[in-house]
Image (cartoon, rainbow over all chains, first blue to last red; front, side, top):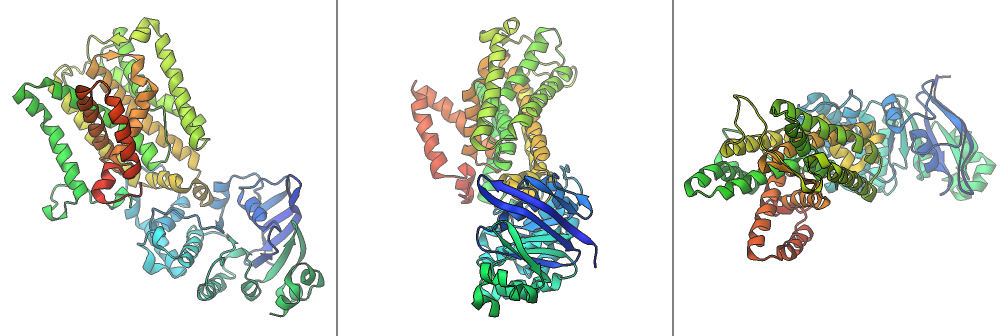
Length: 252
Length: 328
């Protein structure tokens, strides 16, 4: 058993009468690609929010790399190596693709109280950014403004930005949402290539992609994890079939 | 496109690469450089007075462009820094400390300190709240100045001796003073250009465009924005010291909230995020104001709607008009 990188313990969050997280506990060994599936409103986004620090849990604890991070601010978690991609792409529109990724590299290379040298001429920012772009297949779009990128390309850029900081773990919030089949297939290949090297928590609606990629899957329903296991186990779990997958999906 | 794509003006460029923007910038700078000669030849000292004012307020607008244009921090209390810088000079002069080597650092330091306090409180808020807090602080300073009976209260205070820089420069020489202000403006534009394109500038611009995202990729944005706010405050404090020397007079009117509004108009008019935008905006605004006030006493009835039309129709300001960049 590999060392546990992310450990979630009894995480609870209520919004008024809605329980978005109901005692979630989960342990991710380093190198695992763990998928979380569940119907809309199951609390997937809230879980991501709590892991990144944007949502403060009512109770429970989060440990990352052996360190308690439950009350660590957002930027600090990113610096510790917990990178995320956004469900709705939130890039910097008046920057080029390369600028966007370089900014992510910059965030992980010391403080930015540097007022004189031109950041766009710094090889130590631009080169790793270029490599990250190449990794997601966007090398040729480096000089394009984000505004000129297609939807799928923006999602790829999201991943490049998350990768550029050299994270220990990726939180991917529905990276395939709105992608065409070809783009999805490319992204699946990319994630497959990352498997083992980086721990990934993948939240995704594309069931085929999830079953193709994940080492383990957790099913989240109404803020509660009703099952965790490898794809075969999840596929045959009666509670899961009833709550979420439906008979047809389980066969597909 | 941001200004970074603008080819820097450097000696040795060929005339083939002069874009309309660079051409306009050169024309403006050349015109400003020639003002004292024009004034001397024609005996029109008023031109020198007007353009000194243009250059000083351009420095103030430049500092506002740094936080508002590049940083997205719409400060509606920027005239307070002019007042603080001016009062630092006036108060010290009244108390018998005439040396500019003391007055100006105090002016800059006081403005920076004020920016630190205002920024530390206001930068935790967004949008309208940020605007209101910066305005509220500026109003507070305005009323403090009115209450300073020893320094003229509501009536203001005459400064009998301009800042002394023994042996270095004589500020009572109006041409020398003009060139000093002009030089400081050009240095300021260069500094802002460096800052905006540095790592620090990337963080500031990223936070304008998407602060939440900046935090998610690992930037503690607050401290960077605060430092930027303080830099702008210090720069505007210097403009205030220059303004007090220019008018030989300080009064609470320097920091009336309408002055803060004027500065915002100058920045928007010239083109936010354009390096020479604040200068072009200040030039246009003050010349329009002056020209219209000669035509009619209801000049604001013309100026106001005119500026409104400009703000709505050309979102990138005059710079946007020139470059065809309308994004604002």
